[in-house]
Length: 107
Image (cartoon, rainbow, N blue to C red; front, side):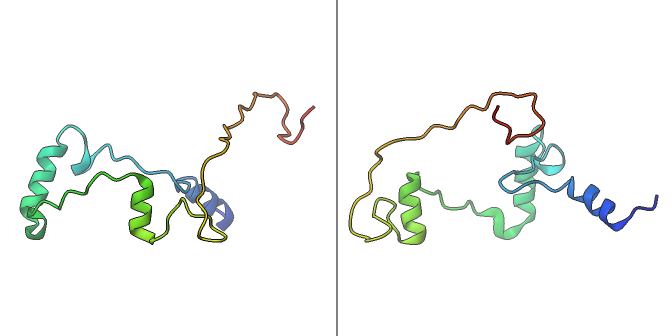
């Protein structure tokens, strides 16, 4: 089959996951059915991976962010002295399904 360059790129990019999405492996050594046995075999075959990695302490995301960046999420981003505290929480709007083809049409 011969395709124009634009059509080839369009079809190719249909297989690329958007940012924030993660591909799930259903086959190979990460398949659920034999994952534990396969990972144990992989660890024995890789000499450096035989050691178990050190366990990470369970930290709140705010503590982990502070460890990684050195910034406190509670400090004011402008003056770096005042403490930020939640005042109001905004919940996502529920969008009603419309039959309109134009998403900007609010009538």
